[in-house]
Image (tube, rainbow, N blue to C red):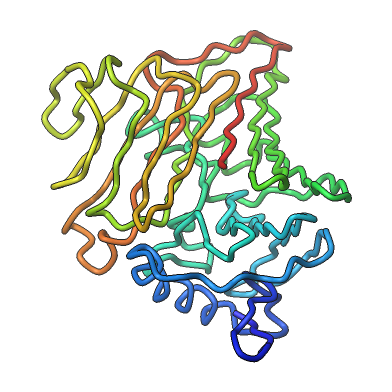
Length: 319
């Protein structure tokens, strides 16, 4: 983090800076170390909002990345490897997202954290777990400047994807930042001559104090506990007291997540995201499980079918 001293208090000038100023690995460690204190309700210094901008940078491991800054002082960083947003900071400097300390930034595996894709397969199945979209290079195909900046990243078939999934497709993800919110839109085109099906999700990692996590807004929804292989119905708020890996079907458009320290995130879904998934590894990830929870927007109850020449679209809005 880069700080500008302003006596008698310290003011953040931005949540993250380009790799030319601060080593990317140091940024991630610093942000992770700060989270437990913030989650306990410590006061966060105010940050001076920067001018709205879109900046292509070298991220951790020198991977190509894009940093967006909105006029209201929010920032977001997206990596072209995996098309994954790794950071979304609010005007007060709090990062809504979380990157695990064991995350790799060398393309040896998907980046573990942020807002990664599970596409064209959620979970285990005929191809690799959670599909291939999160561990291939996307192309930066559009930048839209302004007070609420946005970028578009595009994924097309390759020899690598064809070996697993022989479909013709075009997938874009559009990230828009502003008004205190981050919007991510995934759009899928079937460019082939036959229909195809897929399942998917945004496998979002939220920075949180696991002891204070509460997921609300899905009372009455049908569920599947994937650890016990048991179906059920949600009776009330979901809290974490052990490992959780559960799907929730036909959820409302807004799910609320309390993350600790009096902070919360409204998770709004639009379009084709009809389901949700909640995951915490608990002590299987002893080093970091207390610092995050995954609440995913998903299409996993039934496969999505896209006709030849057809398209499908879904968005999430984090506020």
